[in-house]
Image 1 (cartoon, one colour):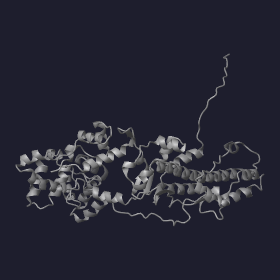
Image 2: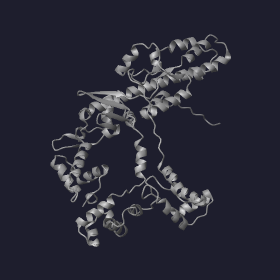
Image 3: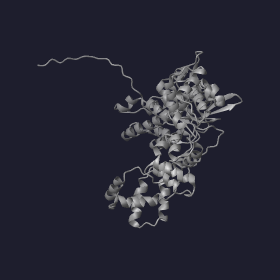
Image 4: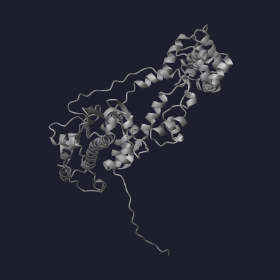
Amino acid sequence: MSNLKQSLTQRLQQKLSPQQIQLMKLLQIPTALLEQRIKEELMENPALEEGSEENEPDEYDTNEENDEPVADEQLDEEKLSEPQEEISLDEYMADDEIPDYKTSVNNSPSDEDRKEMPVVINNSFQEQLHAQLYLCNFDDREYIIAEQLIGSIDDDGYLRRDLSAVVDDLAFSQNVMVTEAELVRILKTIQSLEPPGVGARTLQECLLLQLDRKNQDDDNVLFARVILEQYMNEFSNKHYKKIAEKLEIDENELKPVMNEILKLNPRPGGALNEGQRSIQHVIPDFIITNNEGTLELTLNSKNAPELRVNKDYVSMLSEYSKDKKAKNNKEAVVFVRQKLDGAKWFIEAINQRNHTLLQTMRAIMEYQYDYFLDGDQKKLSKMVLRDIAEKIGMDISTVSRVCNSKYVQTAFGTFLLKSFFSEGMQTDSGEEVSSKEVKQILTEAISAEDKKKPITDDLLMKVLNEKGYNIARRTVAKYREQLGIPVARLRKEL
C-alpha cells in the first residue's frame, strides 16, 4: 500500500482582469483605428449603442475637464458560474446602479462639427501599366504573357524576378509555354510604356532606357551613355576624376554630362507610388496649439462615435426580475447581464484611455515645453520613456503603448510621439543635451559644406568638439547613418 503525501503550497500570481487587458489594447490603438474598433464592439455587443445621453448631469463636464479617471466596475464572475435556484435581479440592479454619465462617453467636443475624412481612390502603379497594354499590338497569348510580366514588376518599377521563374509561372498558372527569348521581346514593348525606365532589370538598364528617349544628337547624352555602359562602377562611386581621364575631357566638360545623368529617375515607379502614399493623410491623436505663448493640449477624437448603454437592456433586466421563478429566464438574465457589464467595461475603458493618453501627452508637452513653443529642434531635451513614466506615476510599458503609432499636430508640423524620445549626452559644461540637438548641428554643417570637398566624419567630430559636444568619430558616423546621409565621398559633386 503506497503512502499518500499531502502538502500545502502558497503561490503569489499576478493576473490581469479582462478590463485591464482591454484597456492595454485600446491604449495601443491610434485615433485612425479607434473608430473601427468601436464599430466592432457595437456589432458584437447589443447592449452598447451609438448616441449621446439626454439630460446628462453637470458632473460629466466637470470630470472631463479635470481628466479624472472613471472608477473600474469589476464583474463578479463567481456569481455567474455558481448554480443558483433564484437570481435576485432587484439586488443586482440596486448594487450596480451608477449615474448615466458613467455609462456613456462623448468622444467629441460639444462645440465642434463632426467631419469625416474623405478617401481618394487612385489606380495602383500596376493598374496604370495594365491600362496601357491596350495600346500595344498584342494577340491574346502575348497579352497573357505581358500581364504576367507586369504583375512581376515591383513598386520601384523594376522586374527583379529571373525570367526563368516567370517562364515557370506562366507554365504552371496559365498553362502557357514560352521561351525566355519571347519574354525578352514582350518585355521590350513593356519597357516602352510610361513612365520611362519601367520594366528594367538593373539600375544601369533603367537609366539607359530613359536615355533612349532623349535627343541622341546631344553630345552630353552620348557621353552619358558611354559612362553608363562602360564606367558604371566609377559613376556609382563618384570617381569623377577617373571618368574625366578615360573620356579625355576636363571636369568642367564632365559636369553637364553628369547633370544629364542625375536628371534620370532611378525609381520610375516611385513617383506614382509616392503619390499613392501622399493621399493617406496622417490623423493626429493630439493637437497642441500655441495661444499667445501658452500651450494648450486637446485629444483628437473627431471620428469616434459617442457611446452609451442600451436602455432597452436595462429595462429587460427589470422585466425579468418580476418573474424570478421562471427557469427559462435564468440563462437570459446571465446573457443580458454579461452584455450590460461588457458595455460598461468598454465605455469605462474608452474613458480611461482618453485620460491616460492626455496625462501622458501633457507630461511630454511639459517636458519639452520650449520645443513645442516654436519647433526649434535644438531646444529638445534628452528624454526617455522612464522620465515620463516617473512623472505620471505609471509603468514604462504603459507609456510605450501610448506613444506607439501616435501622432501630435503642432503649428510647425505633425510628428510621431516616439520621435521626441532620444538619448542624451553631456557638453563640456556638464549640461545634458538631446542627441537630436547634435543631429541638427550635423545636418546644418553638412548642408553648408562645399560639395566639391565634403566634410569627413573626422572634421564633423572636430566641429562638434569645438561647440562643446564630447563626441567620438564613430558616434558621428552612427548619427549620420541614422539621418540617412551618405559618407563624404558619396556626397561629392562637380
